[in-house]
Length: 112
Length: 112
Image (tube, rainbow over all chains, first blue to last red; front, side, top):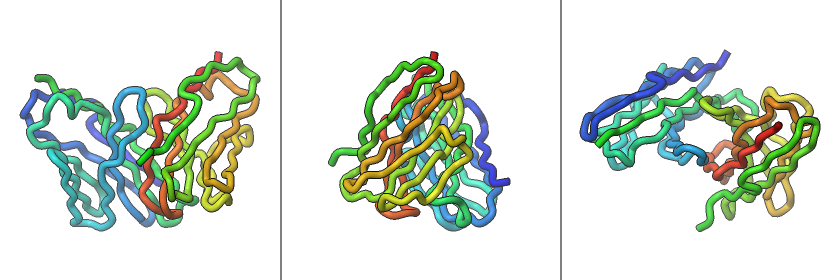
């Protein structure tokens, strides 16, 4: 069964303390791996798409990487405004339509 | 440019009632997908429509139905509401059937 698992479930960081979030996937034929940021009560905000192992993408303090079994979201020198839930999702080649299979998310709290 | 819009923002219904949620995609986007997000979990795929045709259906009962209109907006209908249908309902649009999905703010449905 296709599955996406994120760890840790929650992460408390001091401002400036870099860390990494993990997204492991067990899917049959990955089309793409997506990262989203979600603030409380709001819809997910698109961050990155990764398509092949070895690919990396960066945006401000965030950097996403992809291997054949997992993806990492690195947060460098985070600020309080980086506090949010970060979701990863996989799109499979054989999935129905444009279905994204999401992990449970990592709640990140950055304290000043 | 306007993003994905959804209405209403919040909705309170009683068990057994029916509800209709609405979504307008980003201008130029022809694909709309619907997701259900229960508190503390990642979104779950319900439907995808592209060019007014159903392209994918998730593991939801027949009480859930949707359609897409000629202007690419979409409605999600849920009949015979259950307490377990309480969730944030998210709409996402994309340019192509397998393109990057951009989410709206969601409709918070509470069933009492």
